[in-house]
Figure 1 (cartoon, rainbow, N blue to C red):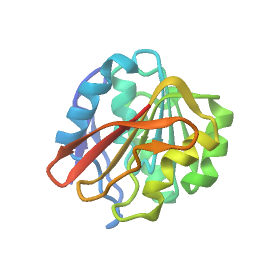
Figure 2 (cartoon, rainbow, N blue to C red; figure 1 turned 180 degrees about the horizontal axis):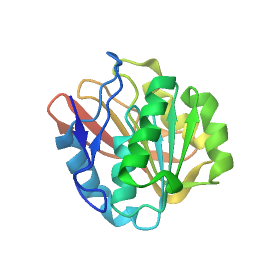
Figure 3 (cartoon, rainbow, N blue to C red; figure 1 turned 60 degrees about the vertical axis):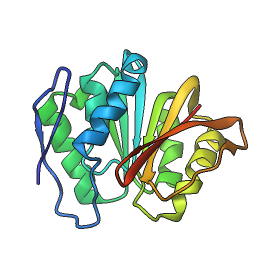
Length: 184
């Protein structure tokens, strides 16, 4: 299996995929839809990629105009793969990789950039962390005013409409068995 960057400066760059059977990269179709929605917000913005896996989403954001990206991943092999993929795409200088679980690593992400324009999360399907993500983002105060939180999940999952701390669900878009929920 291989992934590639769809558009922007690094278009066509092939990305390495770690040998992790639990890893489920965002499909190219979903990534294309996501970044056509996000494109106007990316220019010069900061992107936080939670459960980063291969790093494809954060690298796609950098390729399309984000000024910086932070990748959070708890698997050491996957994090090493992200670093390789950043170098292949030419974005090592625009990125930081943080090893750790999402709730623990958010503190480090907040030290790197006080707030983020776009936060993307793709937790393992069926993870109990899915419904906690919006709350964690508000607790760590890393969400830029006017920013966007996007969570990828199965089409069967339902996320809360309103999160304490003022995040609200704007919409959910379905792409086969995957969905993207947008919070602001």
